[in-house]
Image (cartoon, rainbow, N blue to C red):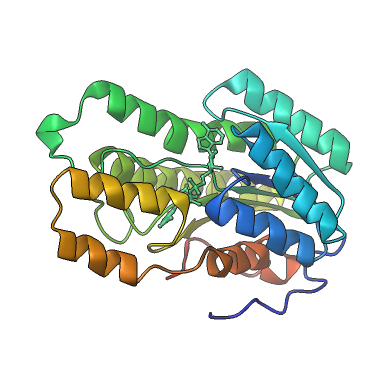
Length: 253
Ligand SMILES: NC(=O)c1ccc[n+]([C@@H]2O[C@H](COP(=O)([O-])OP(=O)(O)OC[C@H]3O[C@@H](n4cnc5c(N)ncnc54)[C@H](O)[C@@H]3O)[C@@H](O)[C@H]2O)c1
């Protein structure tokens, strides 16, 4: 996909929560969901960024609210999803995009347990907690939960040991949730992007260079990055009722 998807009306009347909507792929998803007709709740650890993203959605004509949440803290996740459900009058789709990348280019012998725990907490425990509490609110018979994984840990390995492990784990989590929730009419997918031009990716390339990855390899990756808008289009499509026949893991470039 190279342009904005012709998505007007695709999410008309749908109430969509974007977790991690303050930056990068999540921010593009907030915009795309608003343009597709959704009411949007933006949840993010960056409360000011979430508020800015919600203001942007309102500028597109969408009802929108924002709540600060650290996805690693269960009480915050529960409270933020409760607040989003109250503001939106219910929740039809939760798009879990939040994630971090650390340890790019680091030899496994140099990965300390704290770094491992930090990445697993945000990238694996976070989506578990969001799924757990989203399930209390998602509309039975019409609910959608999408977890953003990565090609790393699913199609390929990763330049980061904890990141690749977290995304492989997230993929297994979504397959398991789909098995449990599909009979209740809630679709669950993992959406696995390739390398996308976002602040996370730019920081990751800097870290890879600092940890000794060859400059020409880093330049090669930087030259081939995809657009956050193209991942956002796929997320909007998955959140829409037209995707009710879609099953399982979806990949984008
Ligand atoms: N950029 C890529 O190349 C790429 C490729 C594959 C997968 N992904 C995945 O896509 C997702 C979005 O990545 P991005 O590149 O847009 O990154 P980004 O850094 O631009 O955005 C990530 C967002 O998550 C939020 N966040 C981080 N930790 C959080 C926490 N504990 N609680 C709540 N919010 C938190 C950040 O504040 C930020 O707004 C991530 O899960 C990432 O792993 C990215």
